[in-house]
Image: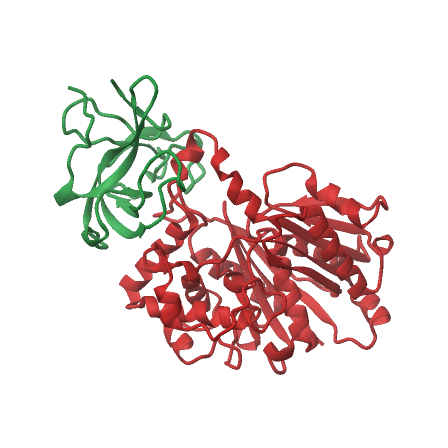
Length: 384
Length: 147
């Protein structure tokens, strides 16, 4: 989907962490108010809102929206598992691009720590038959096959995790804030979860909220004349497409090729390719995923991901830095808000306000997520 | 007491000694594609009304891992580590399942055969079972086979 005439007017988020004593609605209020303040408006100026969460409860999104005010605006719930935040953003961008809204909000909140506790109430039957395959096991299956096909070593996955932990140390919004340089050896030595993936190669379970406000480009130019304008230019969303060998039962997400298909659609709509992108944020719930996405998102050829990593190209200061905010591994992954934290980082980077982790001269960025079920989404942004 | 599937409709539970279970799948009458689990609409050609078939018990290991987290995340069973894999059945479908054996026993491409794992015994003394794959060389009937 090509997006024309929309720009980001405001961003806000609550640092992802464990918040046992705060309600999800309180986290949403804090992120939503931060974004409204960043845009210089109140809810009275918002024409439509899309609210995302993945916790299994009805109506809590629209209730959380009332924390920001009761103006009668249309509110729609969005749920696409881990991809929820980016899909809520896509809907807000499309609401503006279509002309039906001048200003639209995408907001998401979740408490993954509550969901982890609630897992014991899993029902009988198919869910239970599927429950033997944990996300860590599923992505470890990718990792083992990768090692078999390309000679990839656990050190490669550990190097990606260490990079993202160290990126997180530069981001005040990152959940994980290591007080020392995290090394490959430290990651490898952490507790084994699913061979070859260790605990430090996995994202934490945490809570959080994030919000982005999209408005027409004219509105943003008129209201924020001194700011570099960041525009969403393309958004692609795909569900699984059948091919022989498809696995129907047990998987967490669909075939890795979904990401390649989705990226191709996004690049076509944006009119530029991976060679024009200056930073990328991807679904690194487990470190080996990032290695696959170097290739599937088109930043190198098949089987060349290890070389890209070894050259330092995907670290801050490299040719195409990945997960500059720490990624899911360090910044965190509460669920719904994750994609909007990506938008937060991209807008901060493209505005040139990322401080110690600033990608110098960044003008185009990519945000990618996969979501269980499953879906893949790739979103491209461009700054003036 | 009987062996009872954890969920009906996904695999057979053989009553003969040493017999392998089969997976309950579908075959499209138009394009011939096989699927597991059963489905009504063919995922390949969209024909409506696939035929029920039994699949397996043999396939090849496409990938595997060994998980160091309790099965069902601490519920149902005192298993602290276990194998998980994807097996390409001879008929085509790739099936994700528990594996029987230690991490050192698995290698990609090896021949695997379906058997059953007992997860727990219910209040009536029935053994609740799920399907798993085992390396062909070490495949043995799971305990609890009816006399």
